[in-house]
Image 1 (spheres, rainbow, N blue to C red):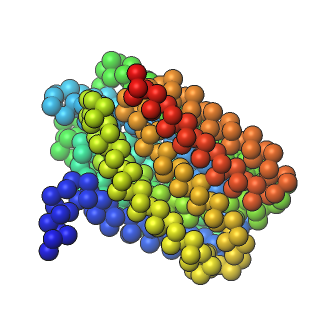
Image 2 (image 1 turned 135 degrees about the vertical axis):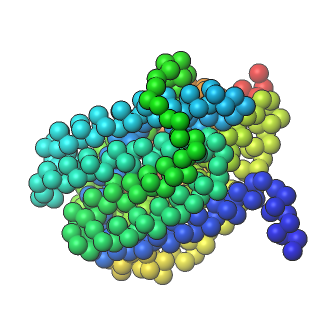
Length: 421
């Protein structure tokens, strides 16, 4: 058939179709997981889960030293020099495994601090945090292994790991939530994705068969630029989300924060399609591009082929919002249908900006990234501080949509300015 031949002949559509299968499985498992969590712990529990998810995201970026995009870049660049590539991979694994273990120890040792900071109103002892500390290194190292596979352009292996990991993670999440309710839902935030460790290790078995702990500091120096970029946004960003959620709770209660977390979970389902496709295809292409014309080809493929599909998907979600929210969660979450349009508008603007933001990593444009990313986070926090007291969740989502519209316009202007030089 013509469409099958077309997909085989075009790498982007071949990877997109392969990625779509993985995304469908991950969305399916995510939907079931969200439904189970919503049924068992309700909006209040969702608020606590949201805080923990943001915290783990910040910890993840601290423990990986913000190097994931840099690892993709240099693993790809060293593809024609196998010895250097192997030395780079071994150095990355040695350093980041050590950091993951130290981070885990720190989480457990400071367990007494996290409950009042993140789980205010949820009475639990510190045992949860020690369980999280045990699971954390496996989760963190699995992220590095999958990132290396991305840099090696091992698309099929990455998709298989993501798919199988999602299925296994679902089983763990459902088991923990049914057995331990809120405590289990919180623990599942770390334990469920940690199952990808064994899958990713198996996929890299040939590359790692000669592994010996080593540190070549020249590689770490090269990656330090990416650390600064990623840590500035990926650590500060989740903390800004935590502060915004605490502000929403203070003015309008835990249920409103739970509704926001439900919206974020919904966004996460469909953003998987875009973010994994950028990691699998567009970021390596931007790394390899050596001219403005090649850059433009990458952007044309993204904005001409991927963004229209994404926009159609968002429109369908809006049209089906009432039965969809009941299906995904429960009737208790129906209030979010009144604000969903603002979440979808913000997500569309975010998707528009996403590849332009990744270009900073591909081209190692540290200063431009820091200015735009931190400026965006500051604008979001200021708008939320002004509008949450007045409008509650509506105000938060007005701020979200406006912030990403401004962010996208700023990135476009910066890109056009650099192209004109």
